[in-house]
Amino acid sequence: MPFGFSKKDKGEESHGHSNGANLPSPEFRMFRSDTSTQEEIFAPANTHHDEKPKKEKAKRLSFLRRSSSASAVNSSEHIPENLVSPTAEGTKGAEEDKWEWRASQLGLGGGTTPVKERSLSLSDQGTDNNIQEAIRLHEEGDLENSTRLFKQLADPNGANNPLSQVLYGLAIRHGWGCQPNSEEAVKYLQAAAANSALIEQEALRAGMKKGGAAKGELVLAIFELGNCFRHGWGTEKDPVAAFNYYQTAANLGDTDAMNETGWCYLNGYGLKKKDKYMSAKYYRLAEENGNKTVGNSWIYKDKYVNPPK
Image (cartoon, one colour):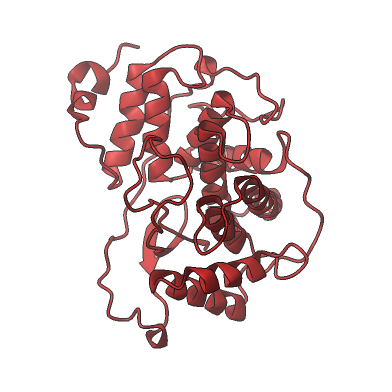
């Protein structure tokens, strides 16, 4: 079962009013999750996290059944030509597998540098302990040493750990204990996505249900790359790519991505036209899973809850 962390930056708006640099450092919270459940986990007692209250209970996630690919614009060098477009047909599990395959396609294709075959560090106890130590240092305000440890674990020629590649990418994107370097951040986020995608494609080929060992890392990397394409952090702005990355992460259970996908539909961002019905559906999905956007009471109007066929 993969693990991840909460990524909402303290003080940062959900819908992109930040310039992306020198942001307040977030609180990292570790999660173990699959496509239907999510459970917060804490570092061992000797890392001083044993007294932290559990901030979030496990929640079941519902998934969308209506295809939205017809509204999407497909022209983007960051989107593979053969990108899977899940539909409402088939069983829930089959559709989730398609969304995960789509995520792996985004992770491996679309203008990124192909990842070299290297050994990955995913479930090694020593690596996990080092990640938790880096998180502890970050939360205590020692950003320089925290980021240094993330960099060591993220090294493609070393531990090559996908989660650390995401965390180090975020650190150098926002300048947490280091000089900001948004271009380098994108490279590490792409490496995390590609490494995770390779693992998940093998898991899907082997018929594994609910994904493989790197599903959480893949979804997290896809969401953060969506942010890069939307805001132009380390790459050119690409609304089409941003929407596709957000939508894919949303359908794999990322609640921040659900809200961002709702925003894209509401504003026609990366789409041929606006779609308030789909916007309301994604916003409701986010709220159902604990990520509420203030002032969105309109999404519960009957015409949006029960749209015309």
